[in-house]
Length: 315
Image (cartoon, rainbow, N blue to C red; front, side, top):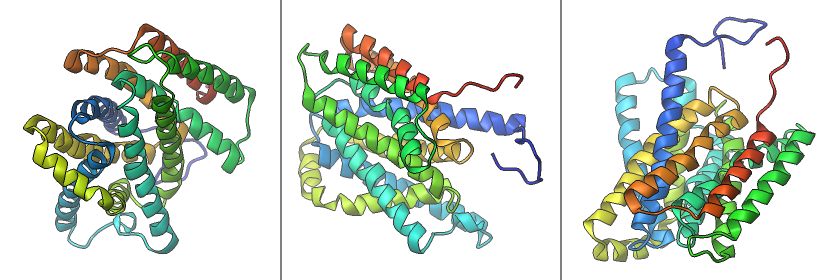
């Protein structure tokens, strides 16, 4: 949290700032949870590549419109961080965008062709632990006992999930794809946190989504064919995924991340799997098997142990 006045202690956010932060967290959690359900809904009519491209094309259009409106209102009086970055920072934003919007969505879309929405959400949300591991490897934060113990517990939970898909059979492909999405999620969150010191969340999200759209253009023929054959309901699901879980939620996520640590921000998404299970039950009549829920609880418990720090005594 930044402060306009120097202080030896961390600035206490105003009630308005705190309300905005928690509102952004709630919007992110709800919209990202709905994305898992939307992906399952559209999966019968759109392949992983076509769904990825369709979603980020819509997201890019929505973000571009918002960007133009904001730019017009500011009329050149834009803060430095809201301008398009250059050089190395721009290159890193482009790489981040392709990985986050492109490869992550591709892996998640493919995973949800093998496992139900709730199970996919449980797998993907070990990402905060991935973030903690990357901080230990790349940022010199080390590997405390809590992290190592939490990792062991989380991996045990993943093993339980792996043997408990909706069909009751081991689905290694779905689990591996879900874990790949989690690694991409954790890696992207770590990189994004570092880049937000140079570019604002809205601009970074916009550029990243455009970069992923260009990278995913090889899926354009598949997308066109799918659009011609898909029912209106599935097309509407793709549009929804592009506008809300992509354009809106990735922007609110960046807003939260710019005001908190990567680990703590990622930890706020612990609620996503529970919301996914509820929404998929209500909208798809689909629930993960009991063993997957147990495994997910174990995995998220391990993630919590690995990433949530104890407050110092007296604070």
